[in-house]
Length: 437
Image (cartoon, rainbow, N blue to C red; front, side, top):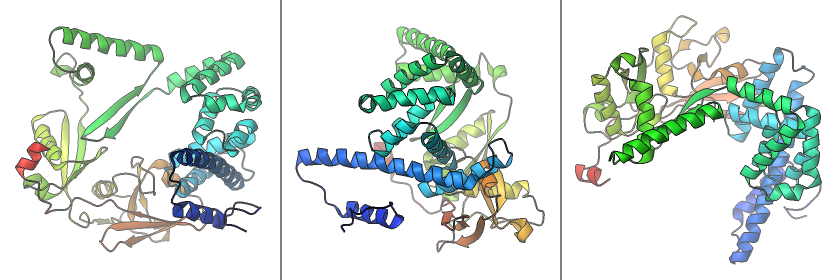
């Protein structure tokens, strides 16, 4: 039997053998064979995603047991499931929860779409689109759309993502217009603003708002850009629109309309980068690493502005200065140090903001309220640990960094080292190089 052949289930050992065979393969040399291989591997990838969905749904069903969806225990069980699936996929619990929901719907409500995924005809992303765009429908109406997909799977193979979304929305609206309208009303209630860091010291400020309002706001920004360009402004249209938006949000018509809520930003930076000529990147709270020169600029701006308070924290090569408390709850200063050390949730692959400071070894088992026994977790990951069977303890890496070792209820072990703090003594490049860059 070759390592690619044989009957029976796809065991972890057999899949590992297939993976090793792919790794060892040099690939074809001719161009047509390259295209054929890409097509075959793409189908293999899609089929593998279908098998992952099967395993995910099976694991979720086994963990839930007979707990009904209405039971308050169900939320805790679902958090536990999402965290374990996320660790296995090396993704955040939030993304894992989406995969669990997708797998559950595909295996219980949409057999034709699931069959298309299992046979490699559509990708996991295409299946996600189909499930997402029919989420507002009843199970019966979603099943009718699934049957239409199964009647002509070749049609859905050839569509782009945009056309797939457009056709599904039209089908969903025709299936149940009332539910479609109700879904729109729920979406309006869920409007929000998000902030994401970008390279080169930039960030993306996004607002999810009703379509009509978004179009009106965008038209207003375009109008402002057109007027400014007509008056000889040499900025790009995009820059003018961005500057206009920021002006209305932060400046208004005068200083009296500026935000009155004090803003504190933590900046973790080495002493040489701040006070000397060091070039080690600093860590800006909520934004991640930023260049040393930008960090120095932020310090100067904060000193002259009334809008924000910048708290500078110096990092040593191995760790921040430790603190310990006899109280069960983490004091504010100690909690702040742990947040600065961990930056985001310490659960592996989760980069959500820290909401809770957690005892790694629980206080009920004698775990101290200390810098070493504390970790920053998001709310979801902290609650996921509460069901029986999770176990964590502290280790230290050879470089001295704090590390948490977590064992899940299935016996799998995951390690989460703290991020490397800024270190002193990294010289800045010569001024000539900085100017040329």
